[in-house]
Length: 268
Ligand code: PPS
Image (cartoon, rainbow, N blue to C red):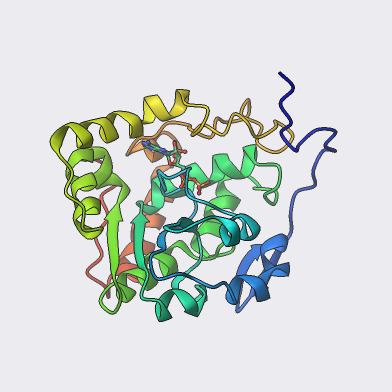
């Protein structure tokens, strides 16, 4: 069978530059499409899954890409990395349900660094130390992790937002799936929950071509550099951070998250 992927004859791609929208750095493509993104029409029964990049959206079936999103039938599951203040107002007007997933800064930064390397459409990552400085300064694509997790945390008191943590999902996936079900007004029998747990296990998603991004050509995602489904653990940061880097992150977390009651676990 002759499968067309749409990637045939593709030229090597150039690493993107970052362009600010409202002082937040975005990939140039996203910034160029800003008017359309902002004007995006949500539907009341849309479910939106939001994360800072590499927090484990666990939802590769969610749609990214404006054209696709506009044409698919309801009820839609959409995903976004937008900081809360830049989400299209239509989602608030339609009172859409939103699930936010946050991951601790250290593991998130490690994952993002590997992704910057393997995704040839991202800007140059620089070395590990430079990358961490950019992470702390909010100079990576999609802006500051701190502002992102805090902004959505505050928004959850005003909107139907279920705020979940990657670490909780790893600790007890069935419990977190039940939280999602309850939020969506669904009653899931235990066998169904167990099936979801199986399907969403890191090891199974890594093998599943629908979730491991193996269909994306290596000119874009070079999975020999780092697989998209890389490690899927809590605490991998210990393999990458020096003591000094770890202390710098701890200080930043205390300073920038201190005012909220937002608490992250960096190990289980
Ligand atoms: S993206 O590109 O922002 O949409 O990436 P995202 O899927 O949000 O995050 C990728 C990281 O999440 C890990 N991941 C998982 N961990 C545990 N279980 C499951 N099922 C799972 N699916 C994705 C993925 O491995 C990336 O983290 P790292 O630490 O790099 O492994």
